[in-house]
Amino acid sequence: MSKLSTSTLRFLEDQFELYDDVNKIIATRKVELDIAIHDENIGGGKSNVVSRPVENKVIKWDQDRVIKYYSTLKDNIDTVYRSMTPEQQEICRLKFWSGDYYSWNDLADKLHYSSKTIYNKRYKILEKLAKQMGLLQ
Image 1 (cartoon, rainbow, N blue to C red):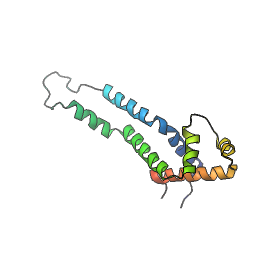
Image 2: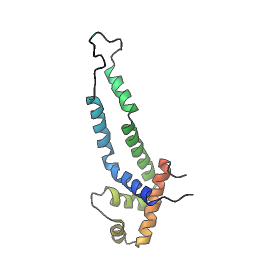
Image 3: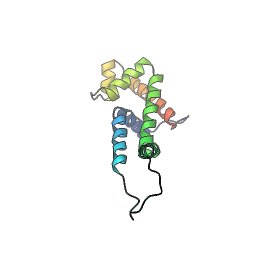
Image 4: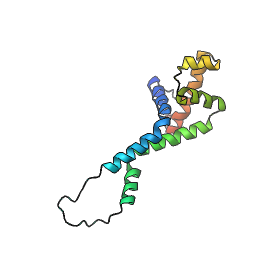
């Protein structure tokens, strides 16, 4: 099995940090897509296309890469979080979603772990997300 690189670990941490904002990002993107309506019938005349605005909107949302990415990210993190031990869940909540900034060393002090132990726990948490995302087997 391959090891996760430092840059991949940072990327995975960023993905965990984005989790709280995913619903807002998706909602904003949907609004952006709704606003970006352009008239393809420039010449005037009657269109031959049947107008189904709700269906067209849902299809546009369903095909959007940004919405797909963040929806998948949210599902992946939800799945990983449910598979974590209570200890891993606490670390995850404190590090990524508490609203307070804790470095890994601060977190080690707060939870009474050594730096080596907290970094090992960090790796295991991020490894789970990497596997869920298909970055590791």
